[in-house]
Image (cartoon, rainbow, N blue to C red; front, side, top):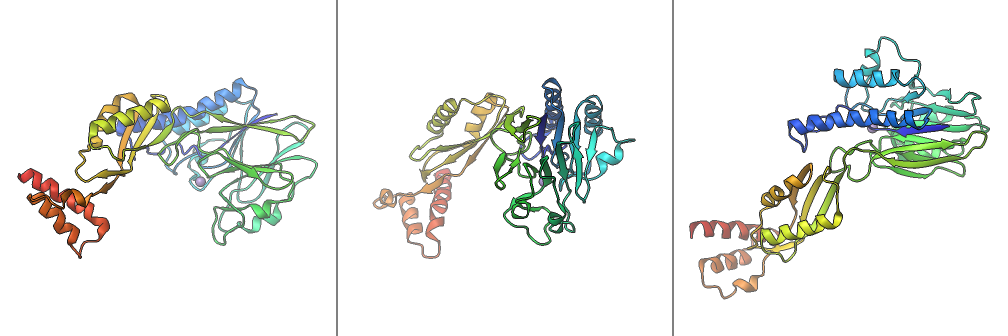
Length: 365
Ligand SMILES: [Mn+2]
């Protein structure tokens, strides 16, 4: 039996934190399209079931396009069972918009619910939607048949122990030695897996598409293959996002103008050999001299046509070599020495004060 485990699609996310209106709209459509591509992939590879471990939607307000597309995707794939467990972002709006719940859409509630996934019932999926009230009391109510292959689905943040009054924290300790073979989690946006106990593993597939620069790198889903009659689960992470996001840190220490920094950025981007469809954040790092000429906007402009989206952040620290100004008789030298000696300005702030002062002097000169 083949099963896809996905989570955190966050469909209808606004996507406007980096992107302009047109591209935000396009990315939003891509998020939806990646889900339907995944279902097509499932259809073409004899996948029997898709586990959606929460946060399918970003908020309760769902566009008609998304609602209709998800509904029709489920209805037109009757051979695939969709197990949809709501996460902390999901509301009831999708389900309440359906006239009838399709037979192949299986749901969960705030009490444990089990579904036999195959004909002989030897593979069982059990899930619960965590709330402030049922967490942490739910763990003792989870009883699983030791003879079955047990998949347990929950949405929340794994931790060794639970936290009182927090709906979203999952206590791994309370789930040990409960005959779980695979703990299918959602909520953490990057792929993550680990050992639960002597029998089982836990796994987050991560979100299906990265949305911001806190979700860089590969994104996709987990494909499980269970050889029936055995308890062995083969699992594999399948990268599937239509675009990736990357943060590239470039150390520009010692460079004193924009064009040499641009050269270094281009060289590092060449070495990274990234897909032009990617979204890139270049971060300038290191220590540069106070009189360095640098223009991050100019660097961004040069990179703009090489990728789908580029931003350039300047996180360089300024450095003042006071000895350069010690014998400088000009107004500039006078100014630097005055700031260096000022007791009421913290040393850490002096480089920026000097940079601004020198810029003003240059404009007046
Ligand atoms: Mn979540």
